[in-house]
Length: 66
Ligand SMILES: [Zn+2]
Ligand SMILES: [Zn+2]
Image (cartoon, rainbow, N blue to C red; front, side):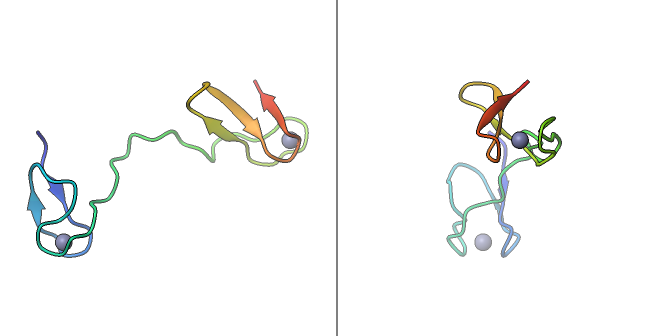
């Protein structure tokens, strides 16, 4: 198991979800999709990725984007 590092106090620990020193949760690991990297071909606004159905979605057009 990889150690977590507290973004507040800098303490490293293994096992728990929250920092044993100050109780805050560690910063999430950088495994998330780059959500601001695509824009809608119709309106040019940023689209968001919907991981559950693996598509990009434009909130402005209310359509899925390829
Ligand atoms: Zn802490
Ligand atoms: Zn759009």
